Amino acid sequence: MALDSLNLSHNHLTGKIPEGIGSLHKLEALDLSGNHLWGLIPSSMTSMTALSKLNLSFNNFSGPIPSANQFLTFNDPTSFEGNSGLCGPPLPTQCSSVNDPAVKVDEDEEDKYGKLWFYASTSLGFIVGFWVAFGSLVIKRSWRHAYFQFLDNMKDKLCFCFWK
Image (tube, rainbow, N blue to C red; front, side, top):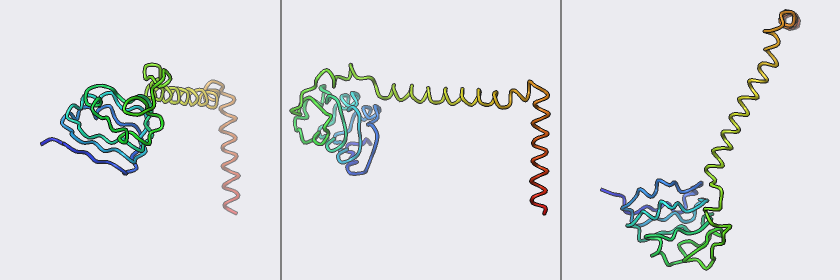
C-alpha cells in the first residue's frame, strides 16, 4: 500500500519542504497550500513522476519553479500563486540571475556554519573565562588562600546575620 494523496493545506506548517519528499515516487496529489513554508522548491520533487496534482499556493517560496519531469505538466499558475518570490513557468515572472539557485548561497549551508561558529565561540569563551577566573587560583597559591579566606569570612558573616 502506497501513499497516493497528501493534503496538508492550511495547517500552519513552517520551514522548508524537506529534500526527502522526492522519495514519494507514487504520490499522485500533493497540497501544501496556505501554510508558512519558505525557501526553494526542492529539486528532488522532480523525481515524483506520478504527481499529477500539485498546490503550493499561498506560502513564502522563492526562487525558480523546477522545470523537469512532472513540473513541465503543471501549467496552472494558481498552483503557485501567493508566493511572491517564485519565478519561472507557469508564472508570468521570469527568473533573473539573482534568483538563480546556482548563484544563491545555500541557506542550509549558511545556517550550518552559523551554528558551528556559535558553538565554537561559546566553547572558547567558556574555556577562556574559566581559566581567567579559576586558573589563577590554581597557579598562584597566595591568591588561592586569599580567595578561600574571603569565602570563609563571607560564610561567617552570612551565618551571623541569619542566626540573630
